[in-house]
Structure formats: C-alpha cells, structure tokens
Image 1 (cartoon, rainbow, N blue to C red):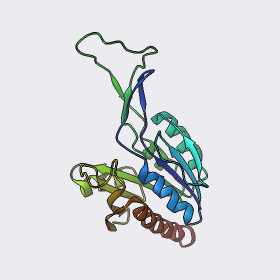
Image 2: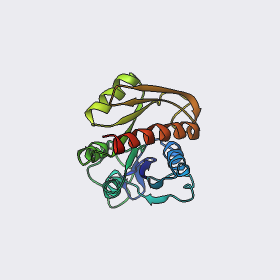
Image 3: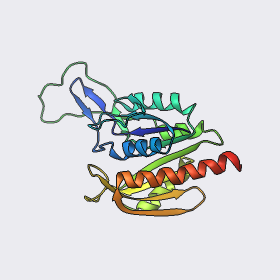
Image 4: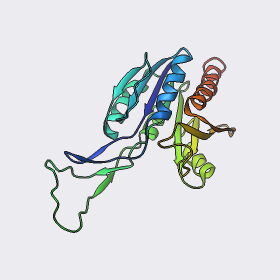
Length: 217
C-alpha cells in the first residue's frame, strides 16, 4: 500500500526571523512512518521542521507552513491508499508578514491572525471510496467527546485521540496513550507505551480495515 503521513509542527511567519508554531516534536508521525515501512508499505512523509532523522526508505517531503503542507498532502493524496494526518498544523497565521524584522518599540504589538486551511477537511472532500483517512485529536479536556465530534465533522475513518495536557505522554515525549475511534463506533484504548509500539498497533488496525474496504466492499 501507499501510506501518506504528515508529521511535526508548522511554522507561520511573522517576520523574517519570527514565527508562530507549537510543541509538536514529530515523534508520533515519524514512528508511524517507520511502522508503516516495516509493514511492507511505500511511505511518503510530509514533515514540518523537526530534529529527527527520517526512517531509511521513506520519501521525505520537507515543509514549513500550513499552506505548504496542504499543497503536498493534496498532491500525494491522489495516489495514497491510507492518509494519516499526524501533524500539528497551526489553526491561525499572521494576516500580514513583515518583510523586515519588527523592531522593538511600543509597549504592545498587535498581530492580526487569519485562519489557515483545514487540511483534513479538504482531504475528506476528495477522499476515494476505498481510501482510509485518519486524523489526530490532541485535546486538553473532554478527550473522547471532542474526538468523536471531530471524527464525524471531518468525515474520517479513524481518529487517534490523546491527552496533551499530561506531562508523561504526547508532546515532547517518547511515550503516548491513545484511544482509536472508528466511524463505525468502535473504540480501542492503547495504554501508555512508547510511540513506536503505539504506531505499530495503529498501522496494524488501519491496514486491516483497508483490506476489508478493498476486497469486501
């Protein structure tokens, strides 16, 4: 299968040296890419700026902004069997980017923001019948409730929910604990394990579902 995975944060420029970003390390997305590759798949990894070497054998596409990630994800979604949106994409970006460094001056600096494109929703609109689309829900409260809303609103096959308010999992950590929710109403909890172990379980579950859609639909 051809597996398309996004990973890491995006950076939205304020001026030539400053940007808006988030705490995503990219570890979960890269672990998924490694697991998909070890399962015998062709893997395309669209990655924001991270400090992780890519697994040998993946096709790595490096991006910075949400706009760049959207362009690459849409391009490769056309040939992908499974799409996993594990990246932490900025919801907003500065409406105007200064061409020069903003100098320190007034006591307050107001930066007007505008929404970035909802990449996951865009991918859902063009999703083929046999294609599997997977999203992530990084939540700090009402984890399952918010994940279910996102699953239905974005027309996903699966959503991976994790609590990013905890210090022992998720952002900047080698471990995670997730719930895998499917559009059919099924839910599986994977208790705290290394991100590599969790990635292997996620790929196994999603791959099995793809086989059913491909041959039993």
